Structure formats: structure tokens, C-alpha cells
Image (cartoon, rainbow, N blue to C red; front, side, top):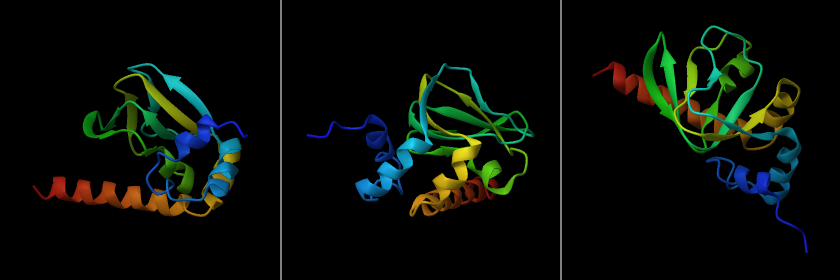
Length: 140
């Protein structure tokens, strides 16, 4: 009997990836590492180049633009993927609000990660949701 893979189980918690077949998720496992960060730790800093992206497993983080909190990120959400996708400086700072467990995707693995079926769609859906929230906030 095959022993369960904890990283595979974590990938199943990501909206947009949860419906992928186990074989597709298993292909992603070697591309990510699990890390834990302490409250107050900065995961991404506005204006710097992006060297890694994250998927939140547990915990929450605050998103800042120009020092102002604009959102909170939590389980299943990507962090830092925009700078990795377009090679532009990060547009926000993300700081751990609580103890956070993350899957980290480094620069060499990122291209392979996003080439897997369903990954870009999952990222696009989250980016779309962020834009809708930002638009709703700015129109009020």
C-alpha cells in the first residue's frame, strides 16, 4: 500500500488544483517545498524582484501597498506569483499575520509548475478575484 504524500494532500487544498487528478498533482510535488514562517515575517516586499512564489497552506498574511493594508491572504491562495509571471518588481508587501505553513516554489521550478494543466487557470482565477475585490473597494 502506497503511503500518503503530505505535500500532495496540501496541493489538494488549493482551489483550482483540488480537482486535478492525483497523477497531475503528483507531478507538482517535486516542484515545491513546505516551509513554516513566524508571525511578522515578510514573504514578499513591494518593489523588489520576485525570486519565489508561495501557496498558503495554513495561517494568514496581510497584503500592503504603500504601507496600507489592502487585503488578507489565507489557505489556498498564491503569493508572489505575479512578479514571477511577468518578471516585474513585486507590487505589494505580504507579511505573515500568524504562524503560516506555505508551499514555496523557487525560480527554477516555477516555469515547470505553471506549465502543468490547471495551475495557470487556478492562478488566473485568483488574480481575477483580487481585481474584482480591488475594483469593488475603489468604487466605494
